Figure 1 (cartoon, rainbow, N blue to C red):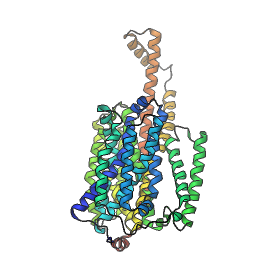
Figure 2 (figure 1 turned 180 degrees about the vertical axis):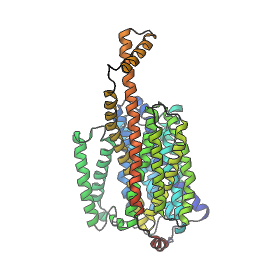
Figure 3 (figure 1 turned 90 degrees about the vertical axis):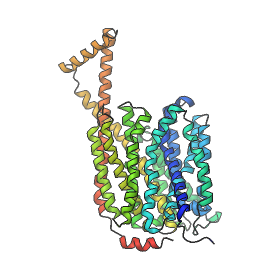
Figure 4 (figure 1 turned 30 degrees about the vertical axis):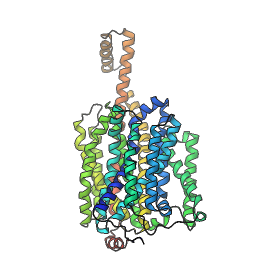
Length: 525
């Protein structure tokens, strides 16, 4: 008979921890590594930019559909079997993605890869949490957090290096050896919990699965494609927003009324988990939002290569890695999670304000170093306390259910963040451009002098006066667009910073459940 406790010791715990971290890293790196290869895919597969962006969207939709169901699927098939099957699906479809001969084939394979990958993140967190005794769970979350925080940062430089030196299929092929090793280690070392009980086919909540897939899939599509399709001016976006709203309403009703729910919503009665899911959403917003905005600014405004843009993020990731065990130790000594989260939010605000101050059309590389180090510190101080707070008063199967909620909210927070940032930037860009253009009066002597100088410069290169004049106006327009773009990036940094600052009072209002934590954590197994 299987022992009730899943706590591991010695080399066995080390192997399980490394396996789980590698699986979490595989999933997260794959969500960002593709970004820098889209241009090559577009040319190689003969696709438009709109079509090739589905490679990212399909993976995200597959991810976000499967994450809330991971706890139930683990119980249905046994955690070890489900985790191993997810790694196999992810690995096989990585190979299929690399061999895709058309854009829509690749999109289909990416969706299925996303279904396999979504499980890796949440199940890895549950496995690590339950492999450590209650008093060491803060350290366990620190170890898991390394993968989650560093993953999005590793993707762009790794993808840039592979695309520069090989070809885009290799961004998928690198998953294969890691996936094979992780599958073998999982089958050998990971154990399934005793409370994982199968349900008969007639008891499976197929209606709940359908409603969840439709509502979450529709929402993810809207967030990924809304700005490009012009939001409510698009019939498909409007229909999918309505589908998502009604889908969530009927899904919640179904899950609260059926005796065998696919997602156990009642676990949200736990106050710490409720707060943790909201904070996970904000963390996802900041983590994925800033990981999205910085490389975009570096490549579009400063004209850096994808690899250069990605490498700039590495020191911040290393800072986070350095911070993780320190924060884990601080938590083990009894410092309140809410205090650390509040400090982390202040640090993230300072990083955002710093970004607002240093952005220009020609900012030097050195100006970013300490600013990004501060970002790494802030992320380290946010991730572990939020995850620890979320799962601290859960026990048994609730740990997996809670991890699924926080994982889904972090993913949705990132999608909301990128969608909001993209829309906000597009609007602010138009506003800044119109303000700058209004100040460029052609009758202004300074403007006329600038145009004349540029015209003479072009004429010295052999252009005729009329073509040189057109080129001068074109260059001036390009300069205005660049200035407007930089100002919109500055606005985004300030927007993210103020959002984190506004959350601090609400975090500090969360009640301290220290006594309850000690009692419940002892009963986790």
